[in-house]
Every structure is written in C-alpha cells, then in structure tokens.
Image (cartoon, rainbow, N blue to C red; front, side, top):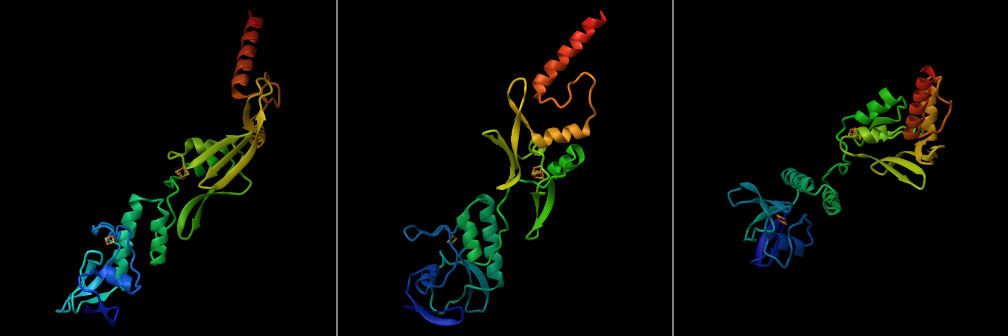
Length: 252
Ligand code: SF4
Ligand code: FES
C-alpha cells in the first residue's frame, strides 16, 4: 500500500494501481470515456485529468487513467483548472459526436454546460425574411432560449406554403406530407400543419387552404381566369395556354 493525499484526505491505496483505479476504489468520481478496465489506458478522451502536486510544490494536470500512484502524491480532483480542462475536453469530444447523449449526460453530471445539440440551423434568417418580406405571413421569428438564438414559429401564422423549406440552405426546416396533411417543422417543433386542397381538374393535392386564401387576398382577378378556381399550377397553366390559343384564333 502507498499513502497519498486525495482532495485533502490522506488515504492508503494499492501499490501499482493507477490514480483513476485508486479514485474509483474510493468512490471518487472523475469522468472517463476512453477508459475500459480490460484494456490498457490510451489517454485519448482527456476527461480524467486531475491536479497533481509534486514534492517541490509544483502543480500539473495529469491524466489519472495513465498516472500510477506513488507514495506522497497530492491529488486534487476538483478545482478551477481541472474544471477548465474537463470543459475543454468535453467540448472537443462533442464536436466529434454532436448527438452523443452519453457525452452530454456525463458533462452535465460534472457541471459542464455543452449547450443544446445542434439543430442544423446556421442562423442565416433566410426563412424568417422570406416568410415576412416575400410571402407576407411572418410566421417565423428568432427566439432566445437559454441565451442562444433559435428559429421558432409564431403560433397560428403559418400558411403552409413551404417557402421556408425551399429557401433553407441546410434543410433544417422540413416539410412532410402524409394522408393529405402537410406539416412544416424545425427540430421537433411544428411550424404549421395543414390539410391539402385537391386540384379540381386533375385531383392532385397541391396547396393548403390558408395559402390559397392568402394568394387570393394579394392578387387581383384576371379577366380570363375563372375566379376562386382550385387548379394546381400545372392545370392552371394548361387552361391559361388554351385560353390564350383560342383568343388568338378568334382574332385571326
Ligand atoms: S432554419 Fe434554415 S433558413 Fe432558417 S435560419 Fe436556419 S438555416 Fe437559415
Ligand atoms: S479516461 Fe480517457 S484520457 Fe483518461
């Protein structure tokens, strides 16, 4: 056995053990991800760093999974420098595995805030701008959540046109269509859910009622077009081409 000091307490630990093994035997928790008791330590995750004081009083941060215990070692598992090193190690790891729940859970247990998982949005605001400035619905906004900006829906304002989905450069906004219902989402938040209307000529489900009403309110009637028609863009084009052709014939 060798005598060491851990977090201010003098204890006896097994000779030849690593600091991490000794800490574990005393039920002192330090985070680890690359440690496995059946394998030789590799020191790759860098999470298990502890502060070690030499006999000359110099402190250094060392990986506890690799370091062997020695008589008289003074070890600290808590403190500002350790917390900074852990936070850096956690941040480096989460960059490589942004959706790893195990890393997020462990970081939280050890007081490191990794922020929310990435949602694929680069905060370019194209969706917000197009919805407000071109479509005129204003159904999206930037919202602060725990100090960070998120694209969020403004309840009830989505008209289901899908322009935000088309303009989003990273596909962070999705449009799903199932059983005649169109849903527009970001993360798991619903921006809008709408029943699709059928084209009265070809029967294809093509637009939402709210969108068609919105368009009617923004464009004037056309002399050649039957008002309030429910034609999909393909059929509408086909009919308008026919109208144009027959009016040309009449003129001849
Ligand atoms: S959701 Fe897409 S379009 Fe909107 S801000 Fe994020 S990346 Fe840009
Ligand atoms: S446990 Fe990963 S570096 Fe020590």
